[in-house]
Amino acid sequence: MPGRVDKLKTHLQGIKCVVNTCHYWGQDHCFAQEIEVQAPNASTTEMTDCATFIPNGSLS
Image (tube, rainbow, N blue to C red):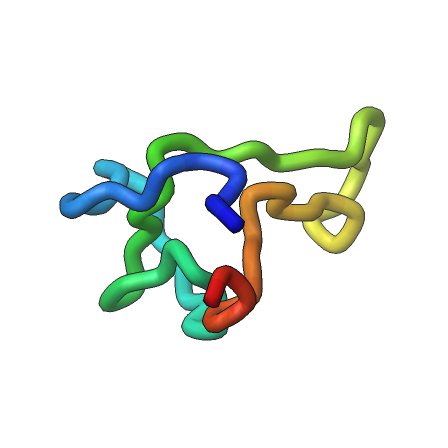
């Protein structure tokens, strides 16, 4: 099963990610080709969600 987006060999510039349980994580950076953050009309950080997140090991 492929990921939602391709995993790159280099990280996205300017995107810091500390979610080390994500398929796209690497050394506190995001290696996804692109990211999608959801929750239309969010008014706080807690109301947002990284829709690109895929748990590590779930693609095997």
